[in-house]
Image (tube, rainbow, N blue to C red; front, side, top):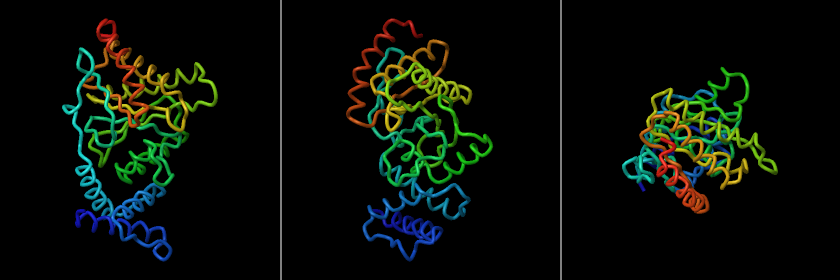
Length: 273
């Protein structure tokens, strides 16, 4: 355990507990892992109001060191799986990827997940990007003046993530049977992220499995829509050095391994390029 990291963490916890007026009711744990859990809890529930620059400086140092300790994964570390060498499947933590942009499956408020320690992608990305991400998203939403519709994309900085940008997209929420509109909206999520990336000269993009968590889109069908949409976009002239389908669970990995056959078929036929 890095003593400098622990000193940073204690500073951050002191600040956040003092900000909430909870010093008298919530003590700082002795165990380092418990300290980290408390930090995540406090940043997860923190509303997007201004914060002191000293906090940002210490938080950034802390999160960037955390990122180094987890291990940054670069594009050259991930093999491609089709003839044009632009498509990859990778199982792991998307917050370790040094892609130009990573995709966040957001909710309509666009402010991240406020459930402490929740393991959704929205929570993980906001936690390890830092509090600045929620502040930037809040500014975007205040200017917009209405909840984010499903199927669109918003671009922000990635702050303390190894990537440069985060593409936020709200997927469809499936209630019962998947409808044609659900399918259209999910395809639109992928297309909007790709289009926004192209408009901003983003050369590599890592997709999470949009809408397949608490939004209940069936995973097998979602994977097919993701693959179809990405390859159709490439066929239309979208220019990327790398597109990565990122899976986090063993179940998702199995689904996308089956989908490798589809990707190989698309590539071999050359009908998408």
